[in-house]
Amino acid sequence: MSSLTVQAAVFVGAQQPLVVRELTIDSTPGPGEVLVKMAASGVCHSDLHALDGDWDTPAPLVLGHEGAGVIVALGADVTELAVGDHVILSWTPSCQKCEYCVSGNPVLCQLANETAYQHVFFDGKTRLSDETSPVKSFLAVGSFGDHAMVPASAAIKIRKDAPLAQAALVGCAVTTGIGAVTNTAKVEPGSTVLVVGCGGVGLNVVQGARLAGAKQIIVADVSDEKLELGRTFGATHTINSRSADLVETVRALTNGRGVDYAFEAIGLPFTIEACYEAARRGGTAVVVGQVADGVKISIDPFVMSDQEKKLIGSNYGSSRQSIDFPKIIDLYMEGRIDLDSMVTDRIRLDQVNDAFAEMRQGRGIRSVIEYDLSPDYPAF
Image: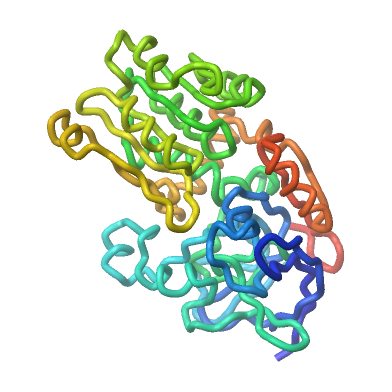
């Protein structure tokens, strides 16, 4: 097999900067796989969890899991995709055979849990290598490289007139946020909603609540700038929880009742607990944010039973990616959701460490790495 050189940002260890280096990959995909020339990759807080050592992440590994690009090669048995297709990458490739996949819950795929979540492919192997050793791909995606080999089920075809920088964000933040509302919680029209955290995911929870017809969308953050972004994306009320008590203010805004649905989109124990407390009797708190390894929360089980409160989790917005990705792109192209404002910085691959520094300081919404699609590839 012939090999291809991949320019990638490699994770070499916790609390160390990513290193941009050349790796190699077979240019011919294996059975059931596709090779994607990347157009764009969002820089997501989940990548920061790995980089900062919040999660036990192996090295060397190409980070990045929120990407979009163009298929340039197909493996055997791939029949529903073609060279030239524009695709968004999914960080939960589905085996399409286990009980979770066949029951319509591909984000819980058993095989993906055993392989992709360990940053390897379905056969337990990697596809990238450097001069001395294999290099893993984060969640079997590795979108911080200018090419990515992925299982065909992780390459979701979308319309070709959608801009790929914006489409990349559908691969994680947008689907996670909107899906938490529409798929996981199934928010009804006229509901009251609290969203804690106005980052990339939280702002898309806001967009999801607006799409669902919520009558009151309260956002909480410690940054006035982020709160204003919340209003831009559809919030009706804001709370700076650095200067105001979150739960008391929510109750004041809801006539002492609490909200029907509270979404935690940060991944901190005290904000998860606050969301649960801010939910009304019979209400639902949804954990959307990703926490560091080992984090625990404290919930009063008597309150849970006595008030029939629900605390539920949402992974990837409970999405069926092959259905939800194209649907979300259509909503964007029809002007019903805003993806343009989410892209606050367009950067080169060698600026990725600067993007993480900005993220640590709470600046912007999404930095998007843009790759050059033009040389030696057909016009699509």
